[in-house]
Amino acid sequence: EDQVTQSPEALRLQEGESSSLNCSYTVSGLRGLFWYRQDPGKGPEFLFTLYSAGEEKEKERLKATLTKKESFLHITAPKPEDSATYLCAVHLSSNTGKLIFGQGTTLQVKP
Amino acid sequence: GAVVSQHPSRVICKSGTSVKIECRSLDFQATTMFWYRQFPKQSLMLMATSNEGSKATYEQGVEKDKFLINHASLTLSTLTVTSAHPEDSSFYICSASVAGVHEQYFGPGTRLTVT
Image 1 (cartoon, each protein chain N blue to C red):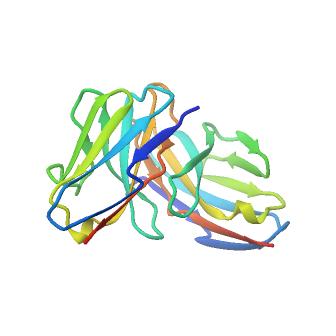
Image 2: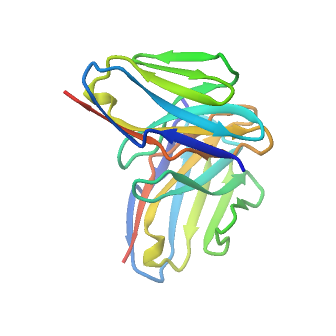
């Protein structure tokens, strides 16, 4: 069964304290892996797409990496405005665009 | 670019009535639109996938007669919750994508409360 698991469920950091969020997946065929940010009461905001193992993408304090089994979202020197839920989703090669989401990691950055 | 809007952002309706939620792609033509439901502190649950001009494909366990989806144009899809009940109260989010592009762009969501 295709599955996406994110860890930890919740993460509290002090401002400036770097860390990583994990997204591990067990799928029949990966077409792409996506990272989204979701603020409370809002829709997910697209961050990154990764397609192949070894690929990395960066945006401001965020860097996403991909291996054959998992993806990491590295947050360098986070600020309070980085507080949000980060969602990982996989797009399978066998379907018509459907995404399978992980449960998300809720990040809280304290000043 | 890639902006998706939803209307209304919040709606309160009485049990037994129907409510329609609109999803629009503002600056691109969406060949496929997706409807999700999200419960508090949970991830997104896909309800259905719709392609312009064809019938929606519903996920297992989603009642197609209760959640009517119409994708009449490349920029508009609607979700109608028919004969709503309190258990239908939730956060409904749509997303849109373009053929050949894997990213889905999400709307801001609609909070439905059924009293």
